[in-house]
Length: 81
Image (cartoon, rainbow, N blue to C red; front, side):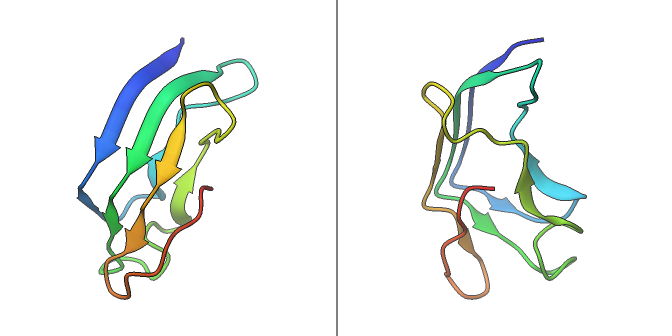
């Protein structure tokens, strides 16, 4: 299944195993996945999600963007997973 052309922008996100799943795997490359300008909450887990803010995001995929995402409590930038 091809995952492409999805945007998650300007949201408050919190919880889950990982808060965001980027959709990529060796057999399933992604393209044009844009995750930007979001605030990740730490109300439920100190790392955003139980295991962290994001997983399976391919920053090198065509058109994929992870930018401007920050921790809601501190404003500190969150690098691409």
